[in-house]
Length: 283
Image (cartoon, rainbow, N blue to C red; front, side, top):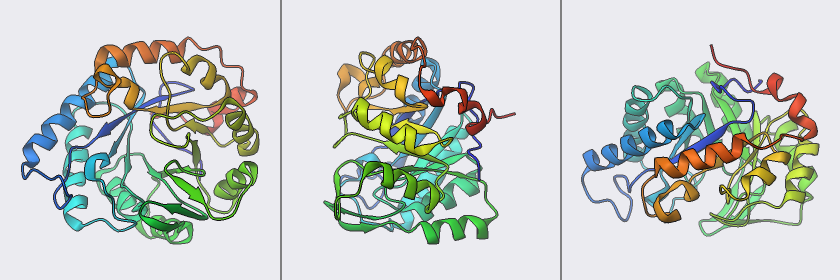
């Protein structure tokens, strides 16, 4: 399946809405209306700043369950995503942390949004939640059962984790695409706020062929011109928040500054000529 997203840019900037703690999470405050209100404010700020898409994730639910989240989390995220869909005319994606890809696929399909992010699609990663095994075989079959066309953006050697063994980055990218059937791949640094290296981005992009490669962490207005030369898009959150602090809300001025920096980049990646066939403009 080709990536079928509603992007108006060849190299999209995708902002992230970090949801406040949801029901059953350790820091849940018992007021879903406040969670929804903050999500609406952040989505609006991202749209006003000029991003090309949004990912909604349960970031503040930490510590995360390894795979299946509580049904209350699924219900809350479904409600929130449906609300945001009616507010912003942007493609929306979902990431259910830590690695509940089936719930993300279900929410995306039922709310009719465009894509999901999966932290571990293939392979085995050692994380603070324990060993997380990729379940591409289950997710792809589930997507087919649902009759869904939701695209899958998959992390390769995801942040806050270490692979079992020492896989080559090129091999890991190729396995994620060829064996895991990812529609796009994401490359991050070692942790939230840490960018991938230019060398790793270039290796990943070369290995991915026509499949888009997204920067998954650590992008800022100062480094995005260089990083974007070796990628097809970027997913960004921390540097868009007030004072650059992860706990703060999205600052539309910082968003617009970042988007301007990203779009002023002269795209010299060898894949830049193939991006248009990999990311289709939504009609």
